[in-house]
Length: 107
Image (cartoon, rainbow, N blue to C red; front, side):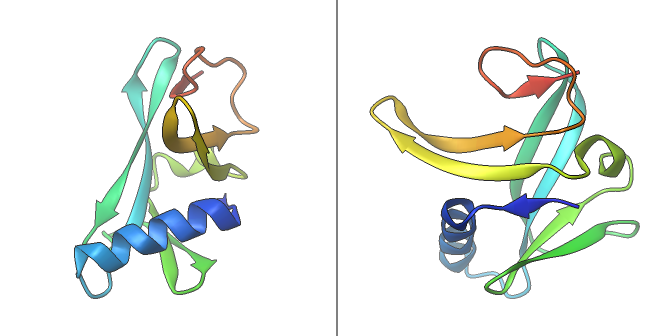
């Protein structure tokens, strides 16, 4: 389904530990919007929701994906990159036929 690189896994695990929420997970979602048609939405969620796919990303990190986003994000790899311009998540989505220059939206 969705995989996290070691760098992304470390960043998510750190954020989950700082949140202090037992059982929390990393939510990944595709929403209508952005300059290419869909935009990636990510964040921490206290628990999974009905209909979610729960991915065990390793190292006690769970990824929650809602049923509508699942086909759009299937096979995607998420990386976390730090550079002089800043730090952030990078999405490699095999389902995207087009993406904007910032990498945060796709079609």
